[in-house]
Length: 80
Image 1 (tube, helix red, strand yellow):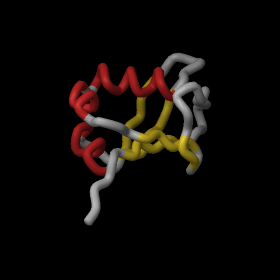
Image 2: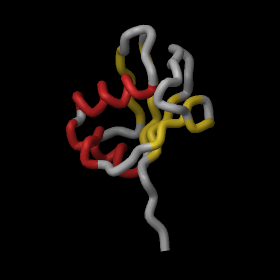
Image 3: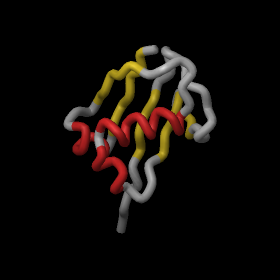
Image 4: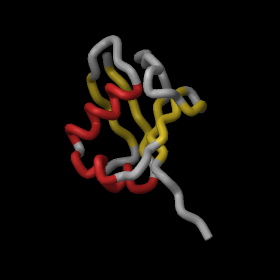
């Protein structure tokens, strides 16, 4: 299946684009997607954490993705 992702912060810098389209096996879980991304973009492994939102809600690792889902990678944010 084809998935579209929105990238923010350091994830956008690592991938080199604010959006990413990729082909993933069907079914695909959030954990499987993250492993696929870490294989394609090894620098993502350096992040201590990275939340995944699906359809504007944080998603658990076992959430099964659908082709029309809105997926966002949200890296840790530092503030002051």
